[in-house]
Image 1 (tube, rainbow, N blue to C red):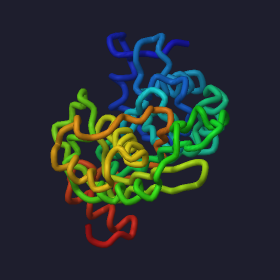
Image 2 (image 1 turned 135 degrees about the vertical axis):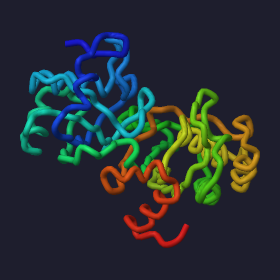
Image 3 (image 1 turned 180 degrees about the vertical axis):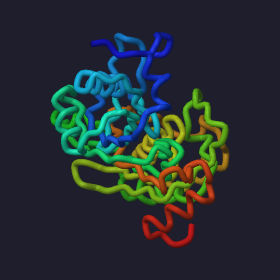
Amino acid sequence: MTTRYPGRADPGLAQDAQRQRGVLLWLQFDGTDFQGFQRQQAHVRTVAGAVEDAWLAMLSETVVARTSSRTDSGVHANRMPVLIRTDKLLSQRGLTLGLNTHLPPDVAVVGADEVPLEFDVRADAVGKRYVYRLISSLPRLPTWRRVAWHVHGTLDVAAMQAAAKHFEGIHLFDAFRAATCKATSTRRHIRSVEVFDRGPIVEVVVDGNAFLFNMVRIMVGTLVDIGRGKFAPEAIAEMLQSRDRRRAGQTAPAHGLTLDDVFFGPPGARQGLDYKAMLENMAIARGFKGL
């Protein structure tokens, strides 16, 4: 079965808006052998293509898989939300078990919820959490090679922890996005950036309202440069103020990055599109006070 892609007639696109119910799937996947989430040409393996093909095989229904944000090739997910609009009436358990029999071994449905038709998987998303894993040890650890970046040499984790705090708050993140990023606004609210030394694994956990293209990977790459002594921890503030990508550090490789979770406001409220409402919702939903 081939994956559908833009440019080929797709009856699911026309039917999608008329479907009777919404289902939110929560996916977990190893992104190593996927070319990201978004469906592409027929010969390109993507997460969306795998889900759409599994749904068609199980239910004989053509659907369109939508998510809150795209992932780069090689990036993993612990809980990625995928919205399906359908005419089928299925139990959450039956849907989960059934789809998993048709999905390949490197992707699985770990949960399913019925959502109102007004639910928008992008506009209603009010926050995301990413985890980036590093290995700073000799010898290298083969069992971690697909999910963590092996950094040669030792890292000054204390310096990385001090630097991470400069990312927190509301900033313009021009210096921490790829040159190909098309976002019209670079203002983002980063709730927290924490660096954990779990020896020999170092974890960088980033929680924010939304992210620019390659933003987390550039943040982590810059923290690694700080851990190696290339920059001082306070240099982060100067990079943010400069709004110049050339001032920041390297881009960390994709395979160390995992989308850990996505958080939503009320279905249909579109709080992800309203910056002030989004901040207020995050504060209430997660118990934060103030900014």
